[in-house]
Length: 189
Image (tube, rainbow, N blue to C red; front, side, top):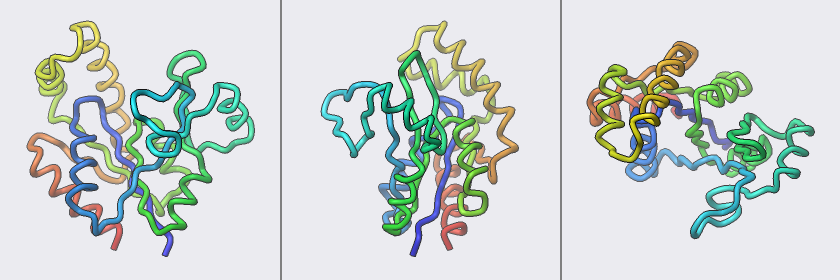
């Protein structure tokens, strides 16, 4: 049986990755597998081609863009691309994997448009921008300037929430996990 798709988007610091990782680790019965994206950056540490990413040169990436091979892609910096290949998603689905996309808001909207009802799109939202500020400051990983940038981006991204199938407000992590699980189980049938 062909797998389905789960798109999860959120502003930075909303708890998206925590919720997705919990679903994948604690609920193997859902058969969730990450979409393996492409990037034009070099591998870091122990990253392996075809495991964390498919590593392409900027030229190879641009060629695939020209050939309309991506579901979505973004040039984050000059010649630093990230994207999702249509064929890779189909390969995973044909193996019966339910493919998880942990993507930015615009990527999530593009994937949903492409797949329609075959994909479930979830938007994980912080309870407020002020709470998001506290979380980002609590991480102690960013400068005040970087936090201000992330908050401005988060406010912008939250304007797209209504374009997703479900909005999950993460004001309590356990509640948000359970709500996500219920919605995903219902979708996967």
